[in-house]
Image (cartoon, rainbow, N blue to C red; front, side, top):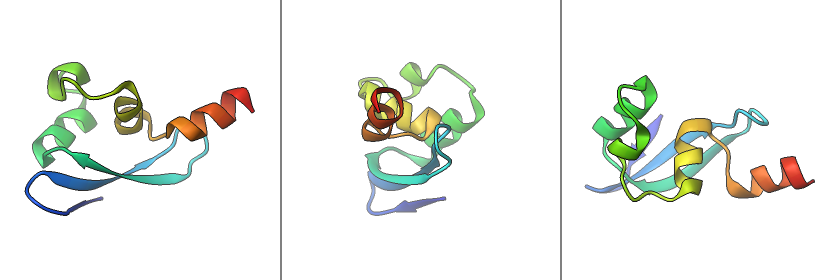
Length: 74
């Protein structure tokens, strides 16, 4: 589920593959881009060029950097 805040920012919800915790993040993304990511229709780097590794990991795998650090460096 996503909530549109304005024309360019959406609150994106993702479930972490590491912990099953649901996280949210405000991201400048369109519904069309999210749909492409969710259906793996093309490489994510093509869909959202310039996004940080942290944001890409959130969109694809649902985890945050803090969660990653705690899980693997714990």
